[in-house]
Image 1 (cartoon, rainbow over the protein chains, first blue to last red):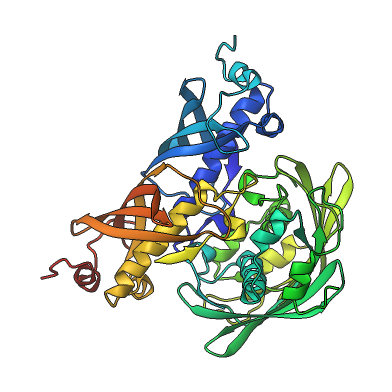
Image 2: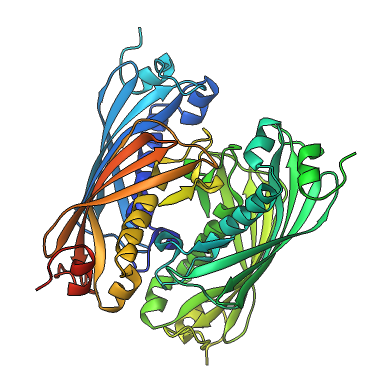
Length: 128
Length: 128
Length: 128
Length: 128
């Protein structure tokens, strides 16, 4: 997924603020399942939501306002409830940032639940 | 209500981004009803939500990172469904920004509905 | 310009928060001049920045997470220092929101200055 | 430092979005040095800026709109260039989130530089 760094995503140093990155990772996850024919919006109508339980980011190089960046998202591992993703932000081929998240499927009540089969299939997991 | 301008609320020019202001106005509205003993959170549990239908802002002077600012919020007028608020942002007594909003009460379905009596009372409107 | 509503741009009501819109309008302005071969980033290296001095928005219909929306931006009028833009947000052809802004060109010191000729030309204004 | 969760910091699930947390941690760092009589704003006028190079967060429990939360910030370790902080978010005494960051001092050019002595002293480090 490619996107352009917004003015509001940058801070007085003129570089993208570190709190902008989790938003981009979330967009990466969204597009990853959309590519497989499913949207989180549909998944939410099934009563399945996702809570981020872990976020780890290493920032090596800054990105700036109006830079076009690439967000690479990869599903690393998944159980019936959790999924681990890894991310790379690249600018002109240079890896500026790497990250990892764990997300857990929860119901409307916030309690852990199994991911809907539709999503598991979209993630390339068997959903028997 | 007083608050301190956050680093992320500022843009590469080093001044608070104009999209930060509607957030402060919303906080001003929140504190206004809290002072009257009601919270929007409680109101939401009654199935009443608020949609901003109009926003007007005049920016005269910038505010900067770590400035302590004052948000003055006043209820201008209200009907059973809508409320008009006026706002002033001040920094060291200087009015830097003035604004006005119209908010409309909507139900969970997004359709207009009357404000709950609890809120009308907190707003100083008779709620008979 | 088309964009997809991000999860973080939505509030607990599940609709795009009204503070998300000024960010989209700013992106609309950015793309408008980019289409004419100029970027605000380049303009900033010339020591010319833009301060929003007026923002007016009318919200008629909400937009939701993952909606694909269209941001239509039009330069309404410009002087040597100021520019007025008008905006429409559309979702599936329906105009959900209209807005207007006034931006003023300022120098690094925050004082009004003339827009650089490069920008005036990109805006379709003669820059003699 | 205590703060109240803002409406815009929450997502359609009604809980604070995970991208809101790094902003709170940054506020925690800001207040930590302010308590020692120094502000990051002053430090920036000395040409010293801070880049977050690592961010790690564990989310155990959600926090919601209008919750009053406590952000506890502790300097864990510091060298002449880097500082490691640890954070806890608490709601009614319950630790909902723990986090750690590494920040590196950089100059206006983005290159690593030593922290100004004023800041090292404020951090409780000898600054001879």
